Length: 158
Image 1 (spheres, rainbow, N blue to C red):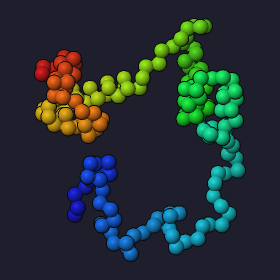
Image 2: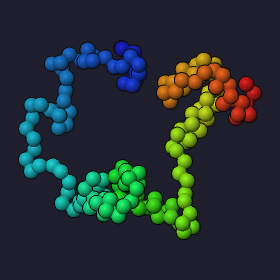
Image 3: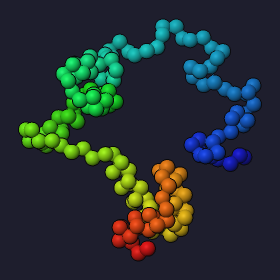
Image 4: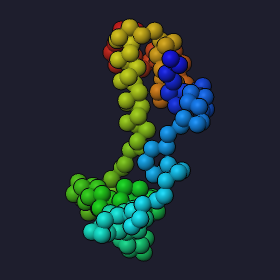
């Protein structure tokens, strides 16, 4: 049995050598030998474009309102309904004219990474192995000295 690899590993996955081409099955709609079902597919008749990201007419209205392009990008990414929900929640916690500082999401990723480093250290994982795990998991190259500082900041005996 071949060794299991992640598709995202540095070595990648083998290309088609596992199953001979004449034995490859094509599940679902990708079957090359089948005709497409009659009657089409698509969405049920009850669906509307409201809630879809690019087809929502409210996006055009938001653009025309002069909303900052960064907020428009958020609305396009998460959908207009979710955008208005987030906007409403943020508005409820600010006074008129007061600006709300939005921290970068990197802050969250850094906290998550640091917690993983501390957990691995508590589990007895060697620092050079922690370094490799951080590179593999978070795509960040940290020195062992940096890892020492993260561990020390968490009040763990280094």
